[in-house]
Amino acid sequence: MDILTEALSSMRTGLPTSVRTDGRAPWGLRLPCVAGAGFHVVLYGTCWLVPLENAPPHTEPIALSPGDVVFLRDGRGHILADHPSTPAEVERPEQFRPGSPVGTVKLGGDGALTSLLCGNYHLDQGRPHPLVRQLPEVIHLRTRHGRHPELSAAVQLLGMELENPRIGSAGIVPTLIDSLLLYILRAWLEDQPPAAARGWAAALGDSAVAPALAAIHGDPSAPWTVESLADRAGLSRAAFARRFAALVGEPPMAYLTRWRMTTAARLLRESDNPLIAVAAQAGYSSEFAFAKAFKREYGLAPGGYRRQARTA
Image (cartoon, rainbow, N blue to C red; front, side, top):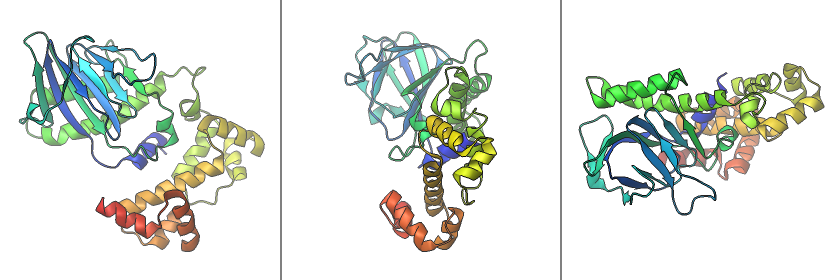
């Protein structure tokens, strides 16, 4: 069971949106907060990511080079510019130009060129999966000099498709952008030194907790107990419960309930399965018990949640 893919899928609320930004020095672009997670890929040239005035203390500008990838967990507002001191303008609709698989923005003067792919992934930040919630607010990855070869390959493919769009590019580019999110998070998780890894970065590689997580994600409807999950982990009940809570951030049964409700919500949004079938897939033999648990978690009965999701 690919827990990273499952966790992200549980938060997705739409396809990613993106725009190619071509700036010639001097240039600066002020980007507002977005509902989801933001990203930037430097295709050519150099620039700076500059925090806004209301950024957390000690947040410094980040120098970006060709091949660099930045992921902003909460889609926080920021500035992109050729230099931290360059005044930034607000993105305007008339800056967008057609003719590419993604939107295009051109701005600045007549100096050195920087080309980026900028965009956001539509993730439900109201109910983030704990794996995503534990990520740093900003992830900066460098893909040059052989680092993160798969991520580097995806960046290179994106650059080629955007530089020279051909037949099929309109389908290839969105797929690459969609895959980029998994490459980014996988690269970050694999960057964590085993001795320093904490939280989910450690849980996914832990010999006891990882099998239990895989079991929960692989079959959330199974009648799991702390004892049965501890057996999978090869630990006593008490030792397993302590280890699971320390790494995942909540007790095993609380996480199981959370994942069952997340699974049910996805089925309600994305399928026409009757409620009794959704309840069974979420581990409930009684539709009434399922409806009560779901309303406690989401504030709506399952039927009301499905109707609201379909009209949103």
